[in-house]
Amino acid sequence: MTQEDGRVAIVTGGGSGIGRAIAIALAADRCAIAIFDRNARSGAAVASEIERSGQRARAYEIDVTVSERVRQAVEDVVKTFGRIDVLVNNAGIGFLGSVEELTEEEWDHVMSVNIKSVFLCSRAVIAHMAARGGGRIINVASVAGLVASPGRAAYCASKGAVVMLTRAMALDCAPRNINVNSICPGVVITPMTEKSLRDPADRQRRLNGTPLKRLAQPEEIAPAAVYLAGPGGSFVTGSTLVVDGGWSID
Image (cartoon, rainbow, N blue to C red; front, side, top):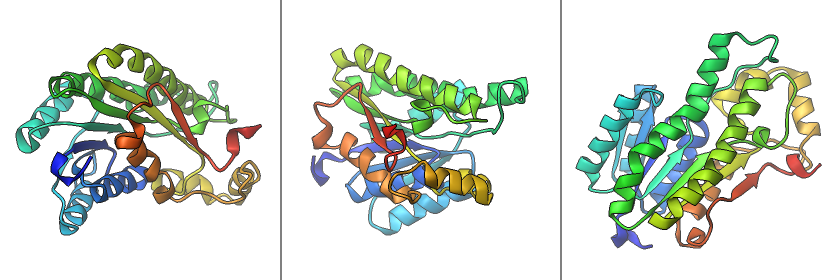
């Protein structure tokens, strides 16, 4: 894939953290970028940064758990950029708490953002991708979807669901030449993890669980998305690419 290919990528939650890093990395790999984020200011800031680098970008203030808003935004991306080649379902949240501690509202909110949004955004782009001969869907799950962590019941359940939805979608989308894969990051320093990492005990527990003995930066996760979106990932589908510093080894 070269610059002449004019690939277009949507990145949900692209205004900060891992999503921001992925959006910038895909732009550097010659993709035009549509950023879906609830925070209009942060999304616009990333879009401006990408445009200053010489690539096209546009930010959409959007709640990716609302089906009609997702549909409208996807249609506007097609109208604006002419196509959709890559979807990165990165938007996610996490509440601390066991099943006993979580409220029903917290549980529903985590499931809506972390798994329902993957369903809604994927459903909205598949026909557009298929009409152009195929595409790539990349779902950002988590090592917590593979290995359980204490006090994170809803987050682990939702990210485990992302992993299995990825596999089911890969089977369904293969006849339409759409590759579907997931990335499972380990502990990454982002605005979402910042609060818990301020607790010395929690930070040390996470360091102890990571054989490389350090936490990741968002820029260390982004290359996995670039690989899956590019020519190197052409024969990869239904896979889970773990980028966790060794957390899931044992």
